[in-house]
Amino acid sequence: MFLNDAVLDDKVAVDQMDLYCRDLVPTLFSSSLVSIGLTYFFWGREYPPALVAWLVYQLSVSLLRFSTSKAFAARPAGETDISMWLVRLQAGAFLAGAGWGVGNVVLYQDIALEYKILVACTLPALCGVTASTMSILPRTFPVFLFPIMLPFLLVNVLPGTTLGYGLTLFGVLFTIVLLITSRRNHANMTKSLRLSHQNLILRECADAASHAKSEFLSSVSHELRTPMTSVYGFAKVIKKKLEKHIVPLIDVSDYKAIREIQQIRSNLDVIVTEGERLTSLINNVLDLAKLEAGRVEWHFDDVDVSGVVEHVAATIMPLTEARQLFLKLGVEKGLPCVRGDHDRLVQVLINLGSNAAKFTERGGVTFSAHREGEDIVVSIADTGIGIAAENCAKVFDKFHQIGDTLTDKPPGTGLGLSICKEIIDRHGGRIWVESELGKGSEFKFTLPVEY
Image (cartoon, rainbow, N blue to C red):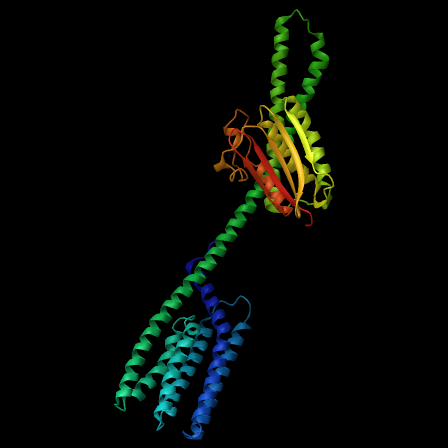
């Protein structure tokens, strides 16, 4: 999904007009107050009917601009042709500027010096205050500024006084600075709005790509898991039948037949082992796809952390015994229940526990859990190969593998720990590792008591 420049320009123009109409109300309110204030100060010093006519004009123009901004806000949704709206808003800005320009002439007739200075300060100040709002739309600020400043310059330069020349010079410089600033502000505003739309489009594209990736991974994982399960399932059946029905029939003196049987048994062991490993990898990919797509079904309930840790330790025990490793359990008594998904927490602990046993050649694995403040801290420590300090922050990244590069273990997907992190994050906790290369690792995660 990409927008060409013309469509993008239309969207930016609509945003500019929305922003202008939203910011216009305070400007109109302040302009009306200044008009009323000046009428009050000059009452009795100028011809009253002229003052009243000027004030009525100012308030009428403000009302017209206000109604135009409200009409634009109420336009039909999806309307992108705003050229006529731009003309109407710019016409309103011109009428407002012309009103202040006429005010220069009306208020400057035969008044005391201090009142001339008041007008000379008020009008440029008004231009400066409105510059930010008027700069939002293209060519709108000059349309507003020139009808104000041209009469101001004329009524000051024509009398030929020193003060008049000074105010004229000041007015010219002030006008130039305001025009340059307004042009720069408009360019920056336009660039900012364009970038905002482009970022939105890129984010939508990225979300769509991520969704497509998750759908692809989920679909492929499902398609691969069924035949893979069948392959190593049948391999198990063949091995069982081989041991039960064929091996007993082999003559022990037939060395050739025995060697063939041993080779077949070895091949079947490879099929079963690799099939189980690949199925585990496929399950990890499927879990990740579901987590990223937000399609995991969570079943939050009160979970006995002590029971979960003890259950997983018992599950891991055959693996540690097969590798001649010790397995220790240190769970603080009286730990409260936490709000969580029992099966997902078991998944995290089994992943961490099996990793600990996998990368430990001597020593063993220790499961522990204790309370710290409002959290329960669960840890799985091992005496294995450890992780270098610079890699500790990377182990939870997707597809990032540390341990497999240091051992001859079959490589994994690098998804197990990232899935653990996703699950713990979903429980409102955090997970981290403390390790030193060659001295073992300790993976810890927290679970809030109340979540």
